[in-house]
Length: 112
Length: 112
Image (cartoon, rainbow over all chains, first blue to last red; front, side, top):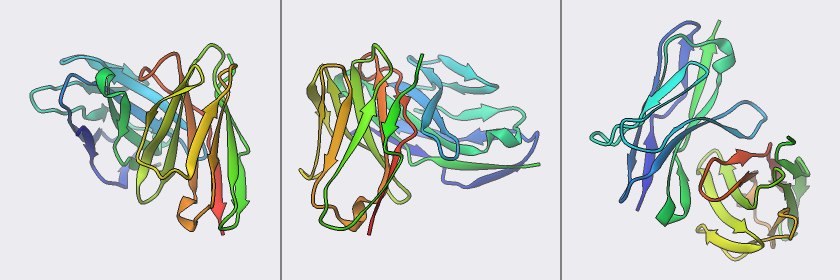
């Protein structure tokens, strides 16, 4: 079945550092890929998405590129801020599978 | 536009009791889905409703049930509570599954 694997956290970085959170997936078809973010005490918010191979999703300085050849959707940001501290979830969905599957989440701590 | 609202935000129950959680989706959204979030298992899909019909279901026992009303509001019920049911229960709405999900802040259930 479909699955999502993302790097375990917590990830701790200093402000202005470069961020990469790895995400790989297994899917039988052609899924859409998502990154969601959960700030403390809140529900999940969609951060960015990509619906087909080579698409790049971007939002708030974050980017991720849908790589079909490596089945990956790594999240990157060039210069993180303390306010980026949150839990990040990679997810996929396939129309025919009628499910959204989330990775286990990666907690990110940014130190001032 | 008002976001997804969930009530109550916090609940404390004892083993064997039952509980009902409520979710009001964004106006115009007809799909409502429920998730259980725990530190150990991460985010797990419970079920999804569309136009008062359950369309998708995750791998949870029959003690977990839900329904959706004609105004798209949804309720989730857990009967015969167990300690392991302690979790954050998230509701999400969308125009249609499995497009972008908009999450509520969650209901934190503690079972003693």
